[in-house]
Image (cartoon, rainbow, N blue to C red):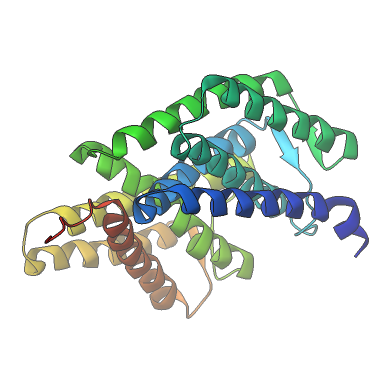
Length: 285
């Protein structure tokens, strides 16, 4: 409990503010289904960006002390609070069509939170600096506002695939890949690259790119299921080769279960994102 009151509670409070923002978003949004789909896409985008900066380029480190026995996973846990909070603020700006000075206000608030976390010792900067957060968020908030505004009228096919992919990044990585890593039944090699965290990030990203690309083809192509079935079988073969050559480590006896979970959860999440991002059906009135 000592770690909770000194470290974890501050991330929990950040999570509470995220829930409040989401309540405001869904209260105001005319198309709540689309708002949820865009929130998942934006969250996946922020997560991918943060994981590159945090894990690959080692810009900073979070210390929420949720998984103190595993610093990489503890940092990822801290990343999740940051990711969902930033995504909620970006969507809030879009839903309420807030002016640019509000973007500056929220960017400054996050800069202040970052300085507070530094002072509390629950966040550590390496080469990264707080002014980068403020400038980066100004750009992200403008981007997210633009994405939300344009999505109200129409989402171009290519952008639709991009949004679905980032939604898969948020859903699949958080609900499937990370829990399997925490339980030890499916992990990615930490010796593929000289640096353990870089190895994990690169292989995790490569795994998602391959599987998501195949699943997008299965779900959005117009070919019949008898031609889609070989793609699904190919994903099982791909996972087998990934494990065979030491790029992934699967607990003995768990291959079929973990692979099926990876493949069919991706199919489910792709279907879900497609439904969320689909335009509403015209009224019969």
